[in-house]
Image 1 (cartoon, protein in one colour):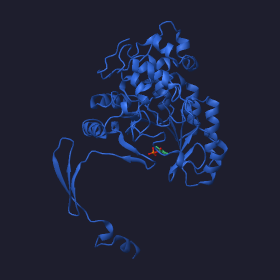
Image 2 (cartoon, protein in one colour):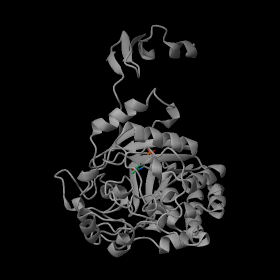
Image 3 (cartoon, helix red, strand yellow):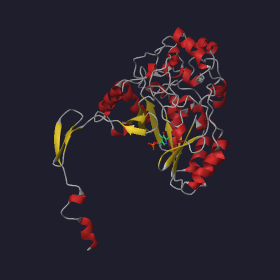
Length: 395
Ligand SMILES: *Cc1c(COP(=O)(O)O)cnc(C)c1O
């Protein structure tokens, strides 16, 4: 199959039949068939794609680091001949993964140091990240958690569920639990429901969310019965992960609509990736398609300093340029917050273009998206106000 690398892929196309013309629709649409028929070896991948030597050697290397797995659905979005295909770059390993930049780390966000209980990351005051599995439907080559994900590396994710529930029960300040991993939607409906039910039994937990790329990698998993189960645990949000507009196929759109129809608010977390989406036109097409699928672009991440990810890293300046190219130029709902997850464990820090040219106690000088300059008079802070409103109310 041929896709133009430079195309912005504005249309919602079907991912079938692609490289699998002989597979019956009933099999294709069954997520268990998709999982059983994932591409996990060099010989399977070479049946469909013309690999470069960088890719071939990368696949051989991946067995000892982060495993390769690609769903047939996602394979169908790849160009047969172009190793620079933006879909291929995300999930086909390359030998560049063996290069280690001097600032790169195995745990770039310092998660292991913020786990009071194995599998539970408590970094922010009122919310936690709960790593419920180490497996995904397919493996992103730039995975921030590749040290524990896929089972190929030497570190294991040892989530202690009972200890995690006990920690959550004791810590009444936690009102938000984010299920991630790995991909929680890989669990059966029953297994996932047991976790959600247990979390809902904890009174102070108000807000649940799931981080999942399954709607993108394996839209067949988003069955009506999964959606019916999830809707019992509202408020429940889902953050999906799409990086390039071609990932939003007809099947993916229908899966996202099914989730939205069950009242699940959807956000998207993209990672800025060189040769994938480091381009304002591509990002604009992506956010427009996300809005059409009722997904709010939530974060755009600067790529974490994960080992062997240099070939996918775009400059921070490119991310700022993309945000600047969106703000004012298109729907505000379509603009994600660009963030750097601070190396070593500082959490997410917003990175914004600079629209404030000057700010003192008299005025703020600002520029708009077209570069025009405006002035807004500054108002004194309340505590400095001669009116002393607090004292006035008391009287
Ligand atoms: C990203 C993240 C969260 C959630 O952050 P929000 O900004 O609320 O989406 C929570 N905990 C950890 C450790 C995270 O990395």
